[in-house]
Image (cartoon, rainbow, N blue to C red; front, side, top):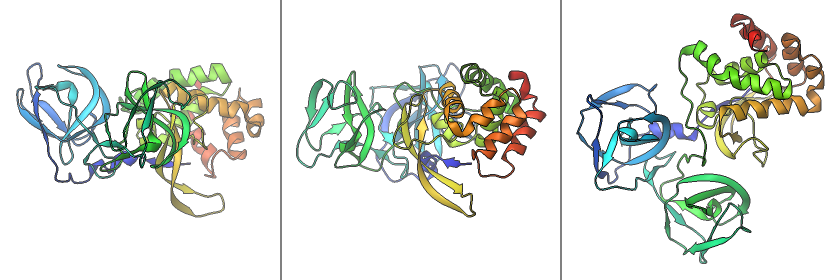
Length: 353
């Protein structure tokens, strides 16, 4: 069992002294715009801004997708310490490029080429063998749109498989990029916006059942068990790993995102060993384009790994299946199967098999 906390959670820190961007105006159909304590509508409302109000903006992050009066966007703007508004309701005059917020420091952060001398090649795809699209000089500022996973590069800034998209068919290796105030919590290109739990427990089940059933049809892993695992391991979808990167089962990278994930990201975690004792550590987890991809990856793991063969022999009996995956070492909690069965019974998840 893994409890993951996104590095982005540090964004609740006090806002450092920094220059704010002006030219932003609240644009709603009629009423005021809610100011939230975080970049989602399930975060606490900490005030309102009237239609037409001028706001000063410090930086941006990816948050809940909002279909607003101005645009449909998953960008949220930081306007103060623990104060966020949806960019979907903001008009700019003139248009401005808003910097990303650093995950750890909460400050506006900028990307610069750090080659220690030479140029950084721009490639048509996330590999050094793809077509060269030009180059940036050492120290050049970059406007990073999102990130993709590609060829692993050991550069001057880090060793990573992450590449930054800086334009249409224009990518640079993140291994040669440094951020002025620390790395932001960048979105993966093409990734679904963060998942925001809605409708309580019933809402979570309704939203996740189709993906669990699709995995069941493809792999044979009982949807009832998969749903119970997702509920138990994410706290009904509230965990940062599930919200931010659609990873509902704590799937780690081990050097590669595998066949179904789109990238790898570090999270601070708290884990307990089978022999006793719990400890903090940093681990690299798979990031998925969608919730459905997370379910399919999880299903393929159970269906294709030999240690779970006995469980798969009992796929028609969800309770036995839950007991067998625990025996095979899926989780260290001695009551893991008991908890899964309790959830399946309480919410009649068997109806999805």
